[in-house]
Image (cartoon, rainbow, N blue to C red; front, side, top):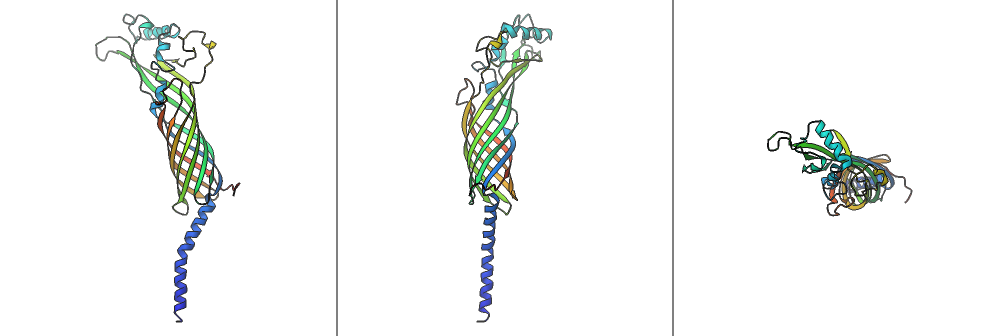
Length: 301
């Protein structure tokens, strides 16, 4: 009987140790991420080429290659430049009105950055919400082929002139997400989030490079043929407001009063462009990001 009590106390201590450790771990989780936080993020944005085709200059787009190429204002300049460089045959292409586009471009976006700030609120059980504002500048690029008619039918005789075409835009994203943060060690957490977003796109440039010279195809002529008095029309942004949904997963490392997250976000979002089909404007977009959270302001309890 005298050995029973010590054995009972020892068993109780052994059983209580994991419970105390679990309680301590949960308490630490509560302390390190609950409350209001300021978030700052930066990442690599991988846009969708489907949306970049707005800048392709194809017929039917807001900005077209033909409008500039076949205009008296710019077409004659382009024709003279190509003749002087020996890139076209003046006997086969006697004037700018005889230009032929052999192939239109397939556009793509270059990889770019995304930076932002946000507010988040984490509850003691790991649930929370986040409001985030992000900004990025995107460059679309591609190449079309202008027929030179030099040595038609003779392979390798410069039948085509490769011409670059590009577009530039600015995007602002506003996200609202519901998130769940789960501890996996004393310092590491896994965070999963889903949400909705709205975005505002501003088109700033759309141009082409022919024979080493750059020409803007951005429509500042009110849909008419380009002419010298282009300043009589005020350029109106060809972008607009779109919307979408997102999901993300991140690995978080917590330390005193703050945390750092490394994650991936997937968006299915619409970017609005003038005259662009709404179905074509919906596409997937990827972001790999790092986020720094200044935790535990505790403005609300």
